[in-house]
Length: 233
Image (cartoon, rainbow, N blue to C red; front, side, top):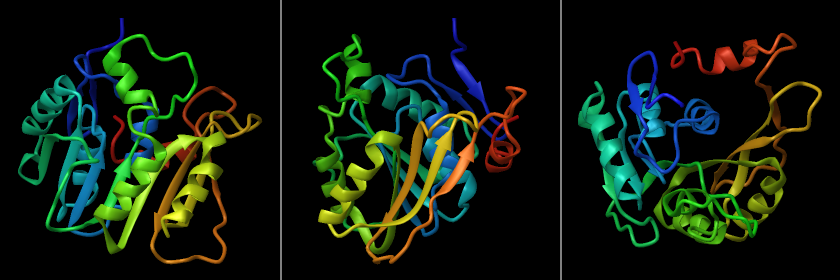
C-alpha cells in the first residue's frame, strides 16, 4: 500500500483522499515552470502540491488553486493550512471554465487531464482528474488566454506524444511556445513527457531541453537532483 503522505523539505502533502496522488509529473512541473510575478494560478490543484512548490519558489506570490473534486479540495486546504505558506495560498472548489477574477495571473500552471482513450480510469474522481473529456485541451487553452496577464506565462506537463498538437492548439489562441523540456525516464528511451511554457510573445526559435530522470544505476540523475534539490529530502 502506498503511503498516505509525501514529505518534502519544507512541507508535507497528504494525498490519501485525492483523486490523483503526488507523482513525478506534478513535481516536475512545480520545479520547472517559471513562476515569476505576484499572482499565480494552479488549475486542477489536486493535493495542493504545485501550489505549495510555487509558494516556496516565489516568496512574494499569492497563489490560487482550483479543483472540481471536493475531497481533493478539502485535503489540499488541510495541506496548505499545515504549511508555512498558508497565508499566501487559497484553494477553491471551482471549475476553471466558470472561474471569474478581476485580476489576471502572471503565471498559470496545469498538470492537465490527458487520457483520451476509450478505456477510462474506473473511479469517477480519478476519471475526472485524468480524462481529457472532463476538461478538454481546447477548454483549457481558452481559460488560460482569458485568465493570463499580457506578460504572463502558461505552463503544462503532457505526454510527449501530445505536445505538438497542444502547441498548435495554443497557437490558435495566440499563445506561443516559449520553452520546452522533453523528459526521458532513461537516456536510451524516447521522451515520455514534455514540459511546455507559452506566452503571448512570439518566439522565432525555441530549442527544447532534455531532462533524463534516471542514471544507468537506476538512481535519480544529477539533472533531476539539481532540478528538485529544494524539495526532495
